[in-house]
Amino acid sequence: MSQDAEQFFANLWQDYIGKTPSAEKVHQVLGGGAEIINDHVAFRTFNIAPVRLEKLAELFENMGYFANGDYHFEAKKLRAKHYEHANKDLPKIFISELLVEEFSEDTQQVIADMVASIDPSVVEQPEFLYSGTHWQVTHAQYEKLLEESEYAAWMSAFGFCANHFTVSINRLPGYTDIEAVNAKLKEEGFTLNSAGGEIKGNPEVYLEQSSTMADRIPVSFADKVAEIPSCFYEFAKRYEMADGELYTGFVAASADKIFESTNAKG
Ligand code: OOG
Ligand code: NI
Image (cartoon, rainbow, N blue to C red; front, side, top):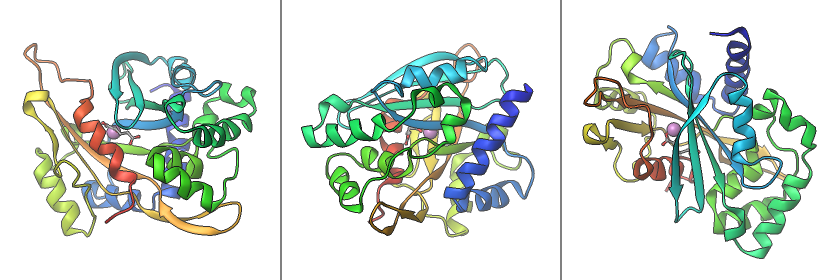
């Protein structure tokens, strides 16, 4: 792994575990402290300059990543792309962006104001990808965004960071199937995202995925501190295609449900 990419992912991980206390426990429970290989890391953004999906992707392209899949989520008003690296020890990258123009004028204005507070020059640096928020919204604004888009509300509270890391079950010693991973996590007290069933996908689409529900952490809004869902952990098992290669893409119908891992529980 190149020195730069290695340092980048180490920094990204430190930022992520600060928001996701259960992530280290996931590693302990599944890996017993041994190194875990991640299948992918996911990021969220808005389709507004200077933070458009393709702009953030440039930071990964500079590390040697290339685009290899496009996805659309009509109901959630999102689009996404995934990026891969020739070095199979590096996680794939899944980046989605909110289609801001499809929301109400009020929501568009709140988002435009958030994005306007970003100094465009900082978007050129890889550290931008774990720089968090560059604005402050009130708790009432957060709740208002929640009514239209859970994704927009999450972005207003957490900004730019890894939304989740994903354990590669294919490369996890001691496990071969996702059912056993899920059973172990539940035995240890984790709550799994059950939207569309605990296991999303199947061998016919060459990908099975599950995820925890996001941790809840206190967030400082402009006016008060409130506990809200932060980030989660995902688990992925990939299957070989007819050519004997493991599928490297994503499955839109499954991803649509994974997004709901940051919804408030119950
Ligand atoms: C991304 C949800 C989709 C996957 O692996 O299909 C996803 C998100 O919640 O930001 O991660
Ligand atoms: Ni994912």
